[in-house]
Length: 296
Image 1: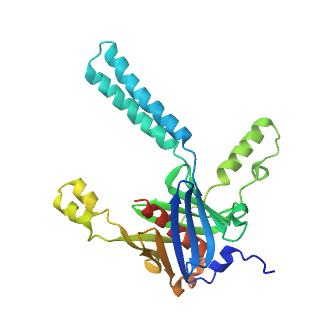
Image 2: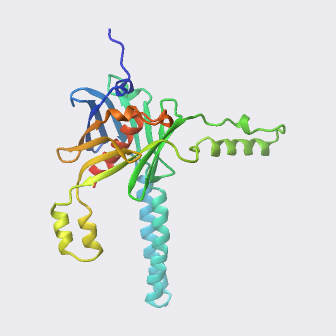
Image 3: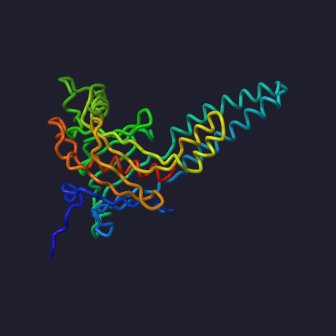
């Protein structure tokens, strides 16, 4: 009997990976292999979330906008005022709809029999429902990195796994109910906070193919629409950079739903402060970019 090998153990020495994305009615799955797509190492699952609450809120917003316009014009007020009321209600409703968007979450499992039933090796999940800010958690649920999108560029930070603070650490000599509630609220607020300041990390730069039909059409159309079309070319490769130096490159395969990720040996010889930066962060960043670009 050969003991099971943790998928993340094989990532330690991997210098080239194949990421293949499949999206169907059950959700999204990305298989990660080493060098050969037939050698399966990790299975990343993005479960299909229920959108019942989302559609209910959206329907409520639409009905409210219609009622606002109908009631305003029905009582004899000017139609322009009815339009203004409907637009105001619609803008407020858009904010409500954005807040109830289903959370995006990726779960990394070892691709062995029963691996999908075991706790995920890594979890990549939206934070506070924002699609530009993600948490990275290990098998124990400890926060060891985060991914954010700023100025159109993705960046992953790496830091020592954060152990959530317990209420006892914030509890003083008094034992009243108010003190206990305050202790629990303080622990909940402090236990999920990423460390402030700069941390070692990687940034992802998407290199696009601008010589395509969209760029040609965009060049013929003036104004913002033309610029948008010209800049919406399909991705050609994804460069992962550390301190301005490319340490990994993801090359487009097939129709853009697969990637060959090559890691430069220099990635393993970073600065002294990069002790917590490893292939888990690099792979999570590449996987997130592949998922978003494949849906464009």
